Image (cartoon, rainbow, N blue to C red; front, side, top):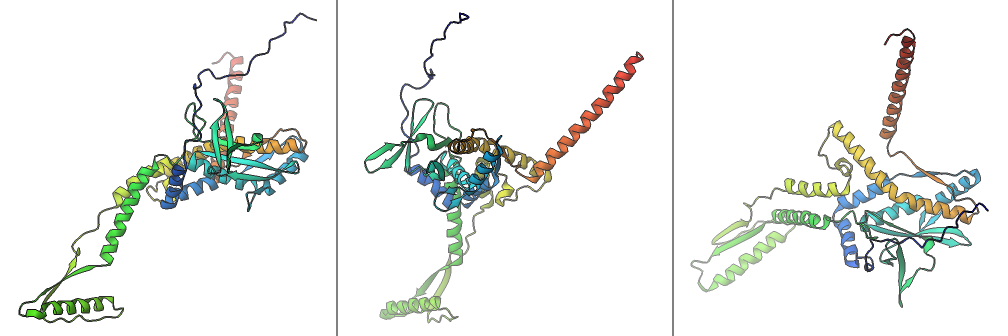
Amino acid sequence: MLGFKKRESTPAVAVQTGPGFMPPPLPMGAGERALYRALRESVPIIDAAIYKLRRLIGEFQVTCPNEEAQKGLRAFLENVQVNAAGVGVHEFLGIYLEELVTYGSAVGEMVLSGGQIGALYNAGLDQVELEADGPLGVKVSTRGPGGKEPVPYPELLLVSALNPAAGSPWGTSLLRGLPVVSDVLLKIYRTLGMNWDRMGNVRFAITCKPEGMGPVAGERARQVAKEWRRAMNSHELRDFVAVGDVSIKAIGADGQAMESEVPVRQMLEQIVAKLGLPPFLLGLSWSSTERMSSQQADVLTSELDAYRRVLTPVAAKICKTWLLLEGFEPEVELVWDEITMQDEVDHANARYLTAQARKLEKEIGGTDEDTSKWGVR
């Protein structure tokens, strides 16, 4: 024995700055989730942006030290059942990302079958209840007839939060702040619809002066109204013939449609800024210069990289769990594909210029060594 002192066992790590009480279950209630769902249904540009984010996120490849494990893992990721009608881990991650972006949190599950992962399941937030399990954990419970019940195998669950606030396990929806802006935008659209409906369906005021008609004035007015309705409701051209002093005027014919381009663009700018996608991807031609498009592509790349950093631990846990259940070492590396061909070209040009610079530095360095032998600097 060399006389080393045995280290005392240390207690579990505890957060010193954590709250004295546990926060309530997932603060986003059914009403707020319904609001975000209605927001996607009411404003097409928001729904289109989320679908584009899902498709632009791309795919990844897995690499394992064991070739047999790598081959089996790739086959599993391509063919695993997802929910009721989906196939492939990328289908699972796409739905997972949609939930994450829309509500701020997402829950998934690895479904075992015969000691192996038989399927992947996306759990809706209406089906589960999330609670803080200490400052560093989240406990998932299901809602049943007898109340909430803790999940028996939490190690098979996948839980993520998007941009959580400090000290909170709950994520932040990408659509936060958009309900007010979208309400103004929809109000403008409803007003435009009412104006066009009024312009396309002109209302008329018919004035009949019954001078000299005596007691038959009321009957004559009813006849005029009847004939007018018949003429207006006819699908064929009909003439309206009246006897007496009858005047017809269009109601609201002199009104002009309100200018909507400026307020609509202001609202759309707020929505596009929150979604993080360049306007041209959503069909908004606000800028056509190539310089601006290049900058927007760089911003889009950074946005997608941020979402990939959230999805990577989820995909890695699925891969490592499959490897463990199959008897392999849980060693795997995920490599995401390049987002666009433009990125690959830029990277190739950057590597080419770097190689040229290094070659030039070596040549200059060799010249300096040769000249130093003669004492020349």
